[in-house]
Length: 80
Image (cartoon, rainbow, N blue to C red; front, top):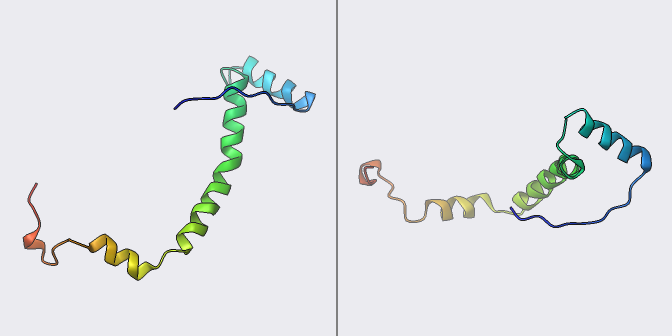
């Protein structure tokens, strides 16, 4: 996946903690540390967003679309 370079401003004590984690070998560098922290923070928010979008779906309609074109009888299914 491609990456973009950014500049950020943060509290000095947070940067010191990031540097400590890098020095201890927990992360390779500052970028990896910050990227992991952002991903961890966004993950629950993205799951919530996915859940909100899923609630908009109509279960019956989605099932019909999923089954569209599938044979009803298992014996009609292709053998692989």
